[in-house]
Image 1 (cartoon, helix red, strand yellow):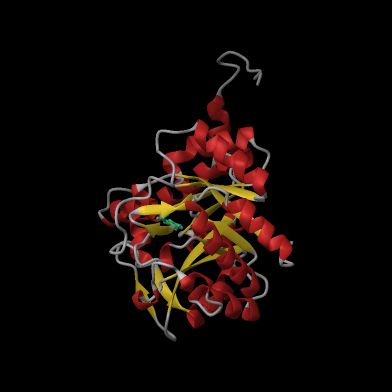
Image 2: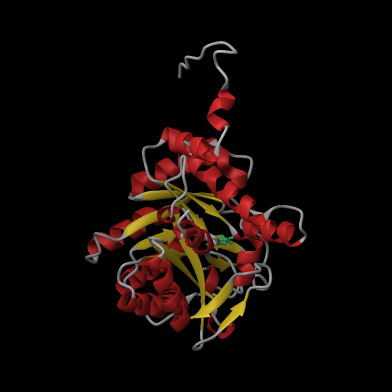
Amino acid sequence: MTTYTAPFPANRPRRLRRTDWMRDLVRENVLTAADFIWPIFVMEGTDASEPVPSMPGVERLTVDRAVLAANEAANLGIPVIALFPYTPTHLKTPDCEEAYNPDNLVNKATRAIKAAVPDIGIMLDVALDPYNSNGHDGIVQDGVILNDETLMVLERQALCHAEAGADILGPSDMMDGRIGVIRRALEQNDFPDVVIMAYSAKFSSAYYGPFRDAVGATGALTGDKSTYQMDAGNSDEAMRMIARDLSEGADMVMVKPGQPYLDICQRVNTEFNAPTFAYQVSGEYAMIEAASANGWVDRDKIIVESLMAFKRAGCSGILTYYAFEIAEKLAKPY
Ligand code: PBG
């Protein structure tokens, strides 16, 4: 890009930074409520909520409370909520049958929200970890995470989520071939309009720790996820994963975690002409909260700055636990 500037003093870049209104006028990127997907944790019970200890300020909600939350989110202009289940331990099995139970937590929540708040989009993860007694995203046999056997379960899970009314499916498991299998199943079963947001560049990350607490998978997980999630040292491989998932029928792609992988976000946005999302994950949230609680950083400012980075990197939107709070702030007249 060629830039034409006069030499100093004819050119004084500070002229454009002098006042609030001038900075507002020339700002290249803005945040709006429409940029956000809000993840919500759902649990059994009625009219109750409980805190997630490693994510201060985030609560698990019963289905009826999730409906209220969805309604408020819709009123703030948040386009999509993503539902994650806190599955009771007795329903977790090595075969993960609960993943395709039509009445599992997220399916119940999806139906209830669709009935009460038709104008908000619902995204559901397609992955087995919340339902697996060993905490992995795939079927495990003799310590090995099986790929093709997992695909058969993911297919059933995807169909029962589509049946429940999910608008967007987010395959987050990183098994090979999953997007193609799910897309074909959706087409064959009369769900041509269900969107797939592929967790394509999903790295094996310590930043997911608090989430695993939130869905109750921490104690269950043996080993780590590095035989299926990506290695933190790889960037070209991420591009190959994006290309693969788009060619198998993904409509949108995701980079995850967010802030530590902003270089990946920017590369995806530059190299692919597809809607790209970033997930500001639980560990990113927990770090901001912990530093803020200690008075080490200015919480409100650092949240907005952390979210703005994704817009600057070219993302279409951001999955963030701050969605509701920031949408509420953006809705206030200023
Ligand atoms: C499950 C899944 C994970 C997250 C979203 N879906 C955890 C994992 O892969 O272990 C992480 C979200 C977060 O950390 O906020 N497949």
